Image (cartoon, rainbow, N blue to C red):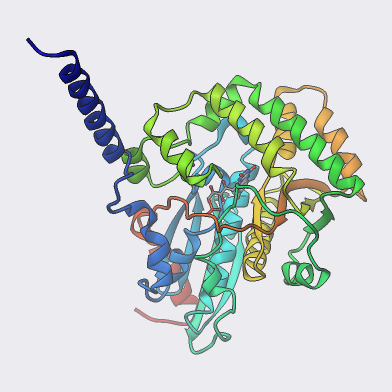
Length: 403
Ligand SMILES: Cc1cc2nc3c(=O)[nH]c(=O)nc-3n(C[C@H](O)[C@H](O)[C@H](O)COP(=O)(O)O)c2cc1C
C-alpha cells in the first residue's frame, strides 16, 4: 500500500513539475525573446541606408504599443503609412492617439536620418488623395546631411516607466534640457510641479478619469485586447502591453505571469490602484502637450513628435517619464457618446488659455531602477508592399532623368 507520506511527496513533485512547465511556457526560465530584438538591431546599427530610418521609427512610443505603422523604402527616402486596423477602439475613438504614435515614429526617423549623413526633409500628409499616407521623409544625396544627432543613442534607451519614483523637485537647469527642442508648429508644452495647486488638480482629475475608464466595460475590453499575458503570443505578435513593463515589481510580475490572464475588470482595478497609489503620488512633475485642434490630423502627428522628443530629452537628462492620458481619453469618449463634456470642461482648470486643448498628459521624475524594453515588431515585419516605385519614377522625372 502507498503511504500517506509518499502520496504527499508525489503530489508535491507533480505540482512542482506543473509549475516548471508553466514557468517554461511563460518564458521565465530564460531563452530568446525575438520580440525584443529590434532594440538591439538599432543599438548595434544592423540596418543600413534608408532602412536605418525604419529601425529608429519602430522604436517610437505608441498608444498601448499598437505600433500602427507600415513603411515603404525607396532609394530616395521612406514613406510612412497609418494602419487603422491597429486600433484602440473606444479608448481612442477618433484615432487621435494613433496619429500621435505615428508622429512619434516620424520624429525618431528624422533623428535617425542624421546617422546617414544625408539631408532629410519631412513632409507630413504628402498625398491629399491618401490621408493614411502620413509622412514622407525625403533623403538628399550622400554627404549632404548634418552631423549625427546627440540623441541617437537614446532612441534605444527611452522606455515608458510605470513603476514607483522618488518624487521631489527637479532643478530648472534639468528642465531646460528636457524642453530644449525646436518648436513644433501649433504645439505647446506646459510643465508644473506635482505638489502645486495645478498639479493637485491634475492628479484629482486623472484619478477621476481613470475610475471612469475602469468602469466603462467597452473601453476596458478594447484596452485588454492589447494586453499580452501569454509569452508565446507576446513573442509572435511583438506588440501590446505586458506585465514586465506594467511597473509591477519583478518578483510580483513573475508570480503574475504564472497565474492565468487577468480579466478586463481586474486589469481596470490594477490600473486604478497603480494610478492612485504609485503613478500620481511619486511623480515630480506633470505635463500637458497642448494644441488648439487635437483632432486635426497634422496637429495630432505633431503632438506625438513633441512627446517623442520630450521623452528622449528626458532620458538623456537622466529622468524617467510616463504618459498619463486618461483625461484626453475621457474627453474623446464623452464626445463619441454625445454625453455632456464633463472632462473637457474640468480640464479648463488646468489651462492658462482654454483655446489650447490638452492632447497628451504625462508625468516626469527620477527613479532608482530603469524601465524595461517593450515588445517591438522588427523592420522586416513592417515594410509594406510595394515600395513606392511610382514616387521614385516621379522624382527621377522631376530631376530631369531619362529612361
Ligand atoms: C499617444 C500615446 C498615448 C499613451 N498613453 C499612455 C498612458 O496613458 N499610460 C501609459 O502608461 N502609457 C501610455 N503610452 C505609452 C505607450 O504605452 C508606450 O509607448 C508603448 O507601450 C511602448 O512602450 P515604450 O514607450 O516603453 O517603448 C502612450 C503612448 C502614446 C504614443
